[in-house]
Length: 245
Image (cartoon, rainbow, N blue to C red; front, side, top):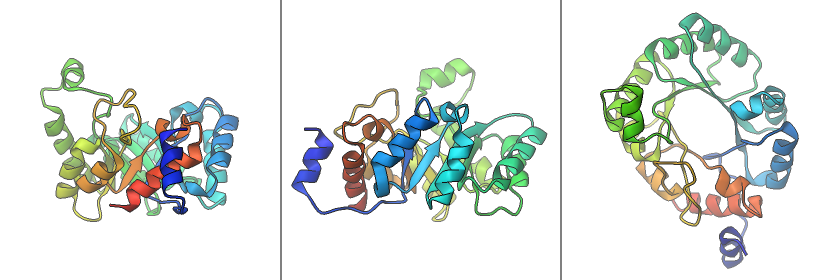
């Protein structure tokens, strides 16, 4: 029996889908992603579509999810010259296929995305600060002369200055993002791993309770759910952990 299933057996009452939990559909094909959505049923209401699924029908699936009443996070991390990012953001928001859209948290990119979003205020622009797979050595190797916390802080402030809506940051920087951004600022934290799950490739991970307690508004939790023997049971177990916060 999986840890998630054991937890459900101990607490059999059903927990409703929590919109703070975002499940990434990082699967090879749209058919695989559709099968996962079917398995999760009404237990999950918010999905992330990243670059892997983009090439195999991700945008069409995003539209279908929206039609079915789900929320969609397009995690495409737009990064190009300002004019290109502005036009891409305008094209994406015009489809009505997403609620959250990510761009890299650099001033020119952020400002362009905000311009491209224009009046589509239902689409929230999130700046990606520092990827949760990166360590201090990785950041140094890229060429930054700042520590991860200092670099994240700079990018949080640049997101605010641009008029974007929030950041994607590790749980370790969630408290800083909440302190600087204020109560309405979106703080989306990948790298969320329940205590019973492996860290996988996340260098700066935290449990759901710890991430929310630090100030996260939304949690991205993938493999502990999608790689579980019973994804729905795993999602429900995590929803129960979230409900305690």
